[in-house]
Figure 1: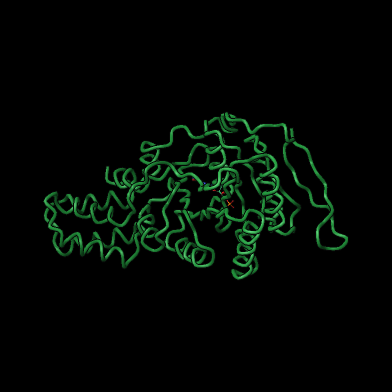
Figure 2: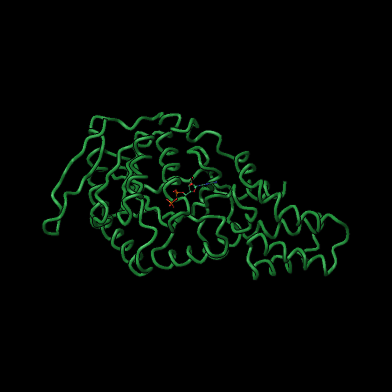
Length: 344
Ligand code: GDP
């Protein structure tokens, strides 16, 4: 069902042809994206139960220690110090851990010290949202655009596949754009996902201008009346400056091709990278402005306290959590359900 279009290289002399890959115009994006390639139905099973599974490692990790300190009898100065250390070990961050403990102590919560800590942690998160995340689309005649940014290895491509499968499963016509042209493998990986999920993709050869890919993808999206374009972006260039410049250029391309469409900018944060990942998120936020966080590998960390640190540091909501490698392992992030699951 795919056709290949070979086009002359734009702008530079004598280069190899660029290639755009997309399904024929008549091919609809199937609403029932294959029970996905790995046998899991996208969009199914998401919810509190999946969050509970996803935070199991954290519950057995730093939270188990927290319970044992707070439930073990009177909480004296030494025990409060241990609470602080445990929160730091759980990636909450040193300053925040100190504040949480100070406020929890001051509360004199009738529910006891554990209820106090829980309430103070919960306060750090934004209120639960009304429903699952959807890309903003003020003008229904134009597609929504989602830029997915972050460092290589964090789970960016897998998250794109998960989000694409989710939206397609909900009936959206989704188109992928392989704008991480820095690595040939990134293009191939996204093409493989597009093929598994039966989604159209626009890709050029490695080394091509990412903005040109985005421009073509937006053209294709308008031509085929797509609802959402999800753009993969480079996770590493020679310098951070180059990377941020490239992202800024992609944004200008969107402005130019689809004036009035403000892209969602989702940052993929690997929960296992702790405070390091947080520093990366801050850099991206300062450079291009993030609208949401996709927290990957929540299932693989015993330090889920990173969620509190992110919310405090950035004020950008965690919209999804990745809780495994399968397409269905994507959870709508609900703050109440998360706190509930941690303390369960
Ligand atoms: P990218 O380089 O950022 O595009 O990263 P990939 O999408 O290729 O993912 C890197 C590795 O992390 C792969 O082995 C994925 O299967 C794995 N991965 C991605 N998301 C998750 C997740 O939520 N949980 C777990 N356990 N593994 C994940």
